[in-house]
Image (cartoon, rainbow, N blue to C red; front, side, top):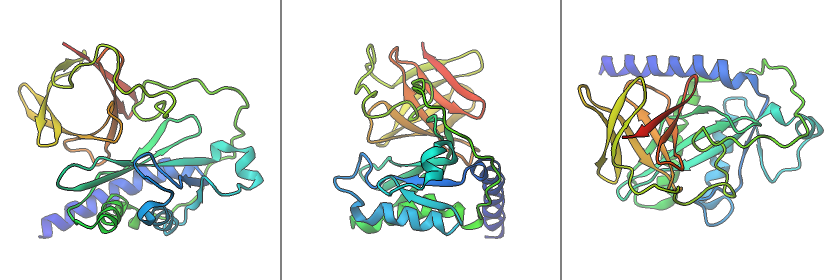
Length: 257
């Protein structure tokens, strides 16, 4: 038990360092009133719960349907957009929360929160609270400088999973893509993608399982939880069937062999 408590404390400390270096550079966060997996605005009061939980960390939280102040309207890059990602399977409700900047770059993605409750509202609330549990040890302090957003078309970002993948840009199945299963590699590493229950795993030929891979409500977008990492990563299947995985220093691409 003592060991578990120490590990939990360590992981919370890791999050605080990451959050302070990443989230403190932004003044506002914007939560959507309705996400793609929801059939109506604020279904199960999930969006309101997200706003409430984030506000407890002293973040200034807005709904995307709110009337924005002049500061936000004139400086869009002061705000982070919040995505709630549903990776639920047959036996559990699973949610992760991703924060994106004004150029659709992923700034931070939480771990996946899970619930096995059978009642939908309870399950979604438990999963969201679990995903955002690390925020209990975080208090936001804005340290950034106002950034005036450039009034021009933002280049489409297709390399980072779930960043340049807005509804209008998303193809349900990339050209040439048949199955996620198989061997992938780049100059640094290779792994097999195998089925694990309703989801997938990455298996290294020598080490064994190195990551869990979870489905989302978009058929070409997945969440990757690398072994030993606190932060989940987003993955997109490219048009050529390659895997594009968000990483600390950009995007890593693994070609199908």
